[in-house]
Amino acid sequence: MEPTSILTSLSTRGGEAGIDTAKEGIRGFFQKVVGPYAEAWGENLALGPKERMHRNLIEIVARASKKARDAGIDPKQVPLKIIHPLLEAASLEDTPDLQDIWASMMANAADPRDSSPVTASFPVILKELSSRHVKFLAALFADIAGKGAKYGKTPHEFHANFKLSELQDLYCRAGLSRVDCLHTVSFERPSSGHAPLWECRLTDDAKSKPDELAADLRNFDYMMAVLRRHNVIGETAWPRVVDRSDAIKNPAPKLVEIEMETEYFLSEIGVCFVAACETPKAVTNVAG
Image 1 (spheres, rainbow, N blue to C red):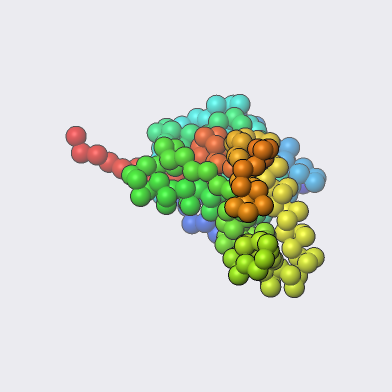
Image 2 (image 1 turned 45 degrees about the vertical axis):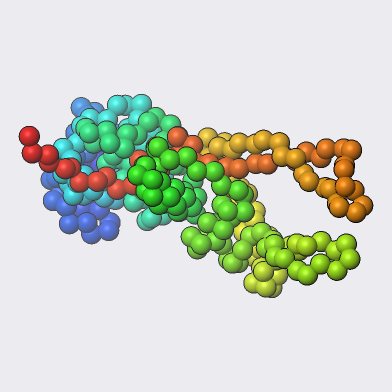
């Protein structure tokens, strides 16, 4: 097979998804975004085992071109330290929904308005995430946006802390788990003698699927570790005094018991990253 440049492929194939953007428009988008070395870039991707990467990149560039056109964006040349790792990482992605995320990031990087700017670290972060991770971040971002909107604030302006159980609930509501709840549920029960007023139990669904529950918890914990390592999700902790007083047995405790309370939040890196992964918004023409 003769080496075929990305530009040649884009002129003859409009992307595997049948995107109806004009083929010449896709070619022009790639030339503007990548710059003067666009003709040479990617010729080796058409050789041997890299042909699959070649096809992936054609699909993603076609999608990015359509997103840019739909938003009315006249693409700019993207700095090499951003576009080179973005193209390399994007070419490795086979999953259609993640290909769409890569296309959105490329379109945002090419947007001269810089309304959702892409930094050099974003391709590094995205290439380590799965579809599940990206969907969770989208759900978390939407939750924060909804809460902030009540106060007239954007996700960049509104800070929201979440308990671990709240993030687990959000994970389940987003349809990312196989059981309906990843943590124990507390409920009040009548007190008898010195029995506790609160009891924690798993839901019936979680109890009936122990293997699925264990797998979901592993997936959730791994996701949190990856997102925290990239500082997409941050955490804050502070001491909390535990009240162990009892009107009869221990009315005035001599020892003060302290527990650490930990909560999590979508960091500023996280907010900007999620915004860069969304389809760019249309250009708004303001009458002067």
